[in-house]
Length: 224
Image (cartoon, rainbow, N blue to C red):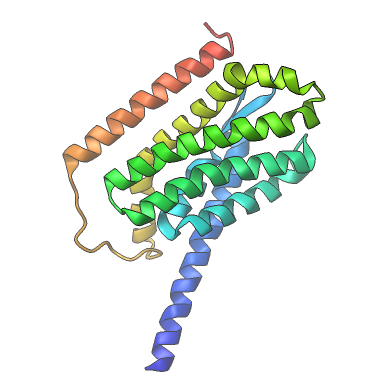
């Protein structure tokens, strides 16, 4: 009995490691696939979608781990070095760990939505502070100029970035976990609620948010 239990636990650990490694790889690759410049020196990336997905599956510590590893992998291609690593890691951690922590407390559609909303505001508020403290170090501009950019540049950027990632996560979470279950990397859900109406509402709202964010990004970049 002891041996069977140990073998089962090792299999679960291996599956968990496989999923976390897969999500880390996808998060890293997404940096090169989806990258949009905003305000000249800030970039939107979709990596937080997959980092938070890992957090939803395995909790906030998993989200923190993927955030740090992904930011480390970015270092060789980063123009801002260790400062960029710190800012990238902090941004991902505040969004993904906050959302994952709330979702872990309330594992439901409402908990996921509430977690993501809190993640958006937690990341936005935290990055306003960290941009004020750190941005002068790598842009080499006076701090009072950075203070003037907080509401005109950093606030809309972080709201757009976090809001878009939250909406994308709501779109991909179910399909992605369904694939993992088909691959037998995740167990089948017990007493799963399959409300088609709720799914349609969530996807419609997500698509609406994504469309609004894309229009805002195009406007910021002067497309129209």
